[in-house]
View: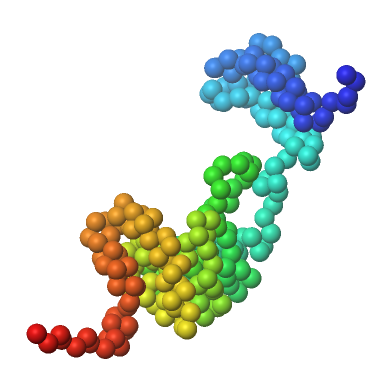
Length: 246
């Protein structure tokens, strides 16, 4: 089989060989053998404790510059200003920092971005993102003013994450009933549709609330679902039932 060796395979072989060359440096950094370590043991670099000789790092850096583009994960490339602004918005929504939210939006952050809270470099695998929007993050943390600011900026209450949760679900799951009722009021004539979407995830939302918020909050949430997620305003507007005559 005379197929060409891919640059990634060649790189792995070179890394294997380099690792064996690095094994020739002992814990006190005395050079014994190694093609890339032709340095006298009396050199000051070897008097700095158990760190690897500078010549090793120089060689590693040189190898990194020669890595074929096909072997470099996409996340190692630099982030754009747009991506940085999106991450900043996600972080500010979680912390409830209005000033940072306004700055991120002015910098061009997408109000319904799915950006995660951290910038992952190198390893593109790992767990799948939750696809949470800043509005979901703010609702989960109970930041009412942030929620209002995001909605004024055009944030959608109809977005769903990878589980199908809406911002209302996030507020309910974290025991933020007043905030959930506010979000429902923003649905206007489509409020019942929002209620239906929340009820579809009722069991998992209650389980989450009980595990991470508390038993009392979970009981209140059960009562809220039993009432059809009717907020205080709905209860006040609902006519009283006439008493049955005996």
